[in-house]
Image (cartoon, rainbow, N blue to C red):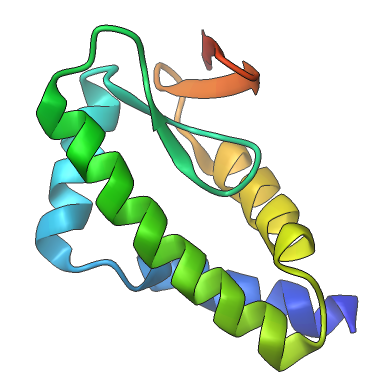
Length: 111
């Protein structure tokens, strides 16, 4: 079951969690600018001082990710939390050096 979950997540992450290209470009730019970072729960968060556009982007991306994670959990007979944990681990690991990840709630560190 875990192998299937990892395969489903790998596909979802490869497809950039089904986000439109425009949102992906905006997300990449906001991450590069240090406004948005990856969280261990598979979602993104905005860093202190980020503009309102980054906050709106976080809401949009997280809604899309959560919808995809729910689909994956349902099709694999697992919980949303398990899917988020696996996705979060992979996304944090894939975060390039120089970008931010959340090390603890509200504590952002540059990789």
